[in-house]
Image (tube, rainbow, N blue to C red; front, side):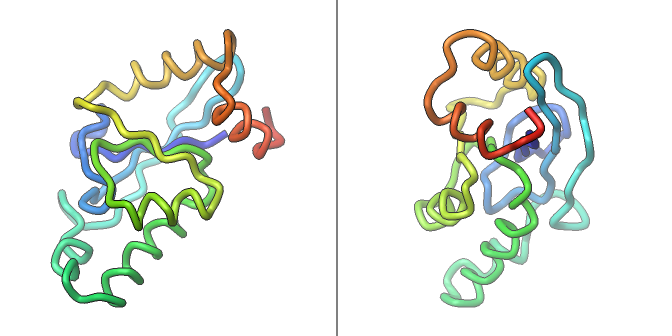
Length: 135
């Protein structure tokens, strides 16, 4: 199952979903996880196209939707913040949005998730895993 992490530095969940210029994508199984790729949405740092279109209605919505589409093969997306409409778009694609209160090392998030998979799995995680036939 693929999981994406909004990241500035490539090692921590430390960015807002819309502002994120990069997501680290990992694959997780019942027993391990591995880094797959960085998906870049901006040449450097923040996604200025989404930020600059914030008050431009449909143009902004289209840019957010494009980001959601590029992450649509992921079952879970981690970030520090997200707007309600963007979260609804993720859920509509079958992607579980996960907000962390404070920046968190990606490896720590993956280790916690791996522990949940192998112990008492919350219903949202069971649903995400069942949507991925590779697990």
